[in-house]
Length: 67
Image (cartoon, rainbow, N blue to C red):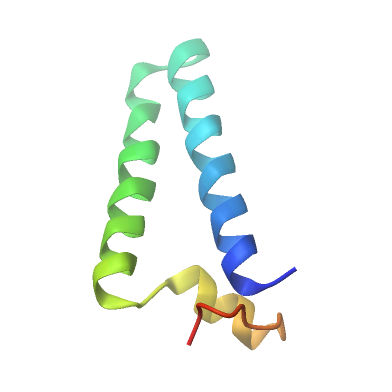
């Protein structure tokens, strides 16, 4: 898998986990989904993604759309 696919997978899992936790545990867990959404938005605008940087350092191959 490529960095781009890992980032999408991780973001999707985090949003689903946040929704489940906010439903079953505490409504304030929705803040995690908000954080992930804001991080995705800033990543789209600035092309800077902390997770992608970590994955690149771990040796995960870049996708076609990642720089």
